[in-house]
Length: 377
Image 1: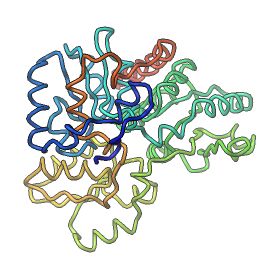
Image 2: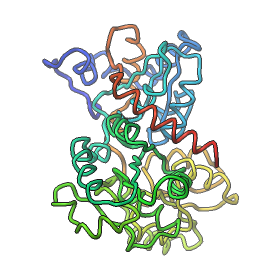
Image 3: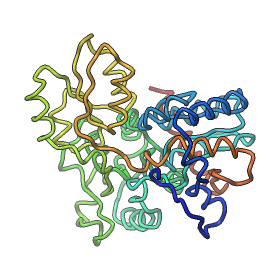
Image 4: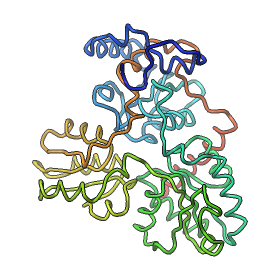
């Protein structure tokens, strides 16, 4: 049985149950037959279908995608395409973002609706709303909420409603800079504490200007004075894939490969980032590997499937994962449920991702603000 799949029928509503239940015929199908079936379906739909593959997807899935990349880049490409059907091989918040940016004549699908994101779920919209009321009642200066792309549509809508924006790991620094210079002195950033801290320190802010908001504690674990004086308030959230990496991992591999270059993702802890040769988004990491000298050895600190794919795509270099840290939710997307999804695109509601209009409208405002700022830099 593949990860995230159930072999027995269940009592979930069809659009939920079908995300997990797969007939035995798919589970028992040989890998080569699945590959051929997927390609046949892609060919039969032609330009009416686009399959998106996030960099963290395993190779036997991402090889069937029309586009590979980060979540925002993939969503934008899908929206700009002529496709009526968008199948996102990623996790739930990514498919939501594709749905927010999509046209009315496009439908977004996720091969497994249970492919979520623990970090995105750490930013509960009710908790964020409560924190916002407390923070704005204390602060004497304008504050802007900014959410990481790795968040729910509800949090994106919250930012859109309060003049805020979305950011990605690649544009966080210029976006923060724009808001600091033109809009507000304070930023409330969620849900990833480490991306916020690494970006802020890179920009020249000091640790004293940063505080962490823990939603389980009164005033997030801070005093009113600390909240009022902070330049950036960081939500206490994290990605378990990237916080798994430690300085010990780097030391061990550097002893084995002393000439190796180390590149890590900004969702890693500050200690890991400081030990690396470079730090950046998954797209940045891909470019870093591609532009490295021939015969280089590159140690990559991000989801293990990205490291594996980079090693496959760059035959003239040796790419090694910093440690075998993988995202189990990304792994819930497999050949079987991708094939099943393509076989049932015309079935009402199955595997479809929809965002309520009230949320979609405000979330789109936050995404468009990000794209406007991106266009100015």
